[in-house]
Length: 340
Image (tube, rainbow, N blue to C red; front, side, top):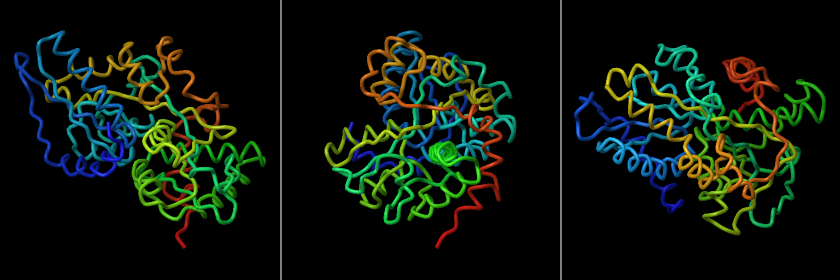
């Protein structure tokens, strides 16, 4: 896949979403269509995965399946579903965004995360730093991002799930190194003082950094960082920080929609396929960390650095608390981020 070409074309996906009008299909239909509403950096993963699943489903049932994709900032995507986007499955960046589908309209049950293994997270990731060739600013860890003259690219945590992982990873680093939440807040305020622009999603920030040539360092999903390195080669280097966060993107069927459209069976099978050996291999191939397959974990272990990872539950008391403390209106992000 041409990663650069996808960068250029991706806004078309958003334009197409509005024209999607999926209707219920009878059980004897020769074809079925699913809509996967996902977050920014999963584009390449699901292009490959969708092809594999379509082949599997055709062989199992004789039915053709087409999977349409919608991508954007995770929080923004969740709101689109709540506002009526007919998603059959939601594969968002964090469980907190998915929880919103329950609390705002009951699109999914409260215990949705218990329906699939590994808390409905078939793959994991983390947050790393991407710098320009040769690392001219000498960036080695989070504390280098607050130095004068360092321009940092990261998306807006009000709209992007990846940006929330970025923010919390930096916060926990500072809390441990400098002692306490007050020091962490000061540190993160300095970091965002070095951010010239907040894109709405992770892919937008990658475009800003890689194609528009803005910034000295990109705070990025691990898979996004390695896709950049793969596409552009020596133009970028990936820096693994001393500590980062275990990101657990979660997946679910959107119950109200699949029951209305008659697509529950194929939608559930679609998500289960993520946990198969083939699905786990595709995740690893696209630089996500396989969550359940020991074979895939072993196969792709060398491409992932060994990092000191903490969890959202251990460091922040879970997504509900983290969202209230940091990303709700007038919470810590609103308090520290001001445009100059």
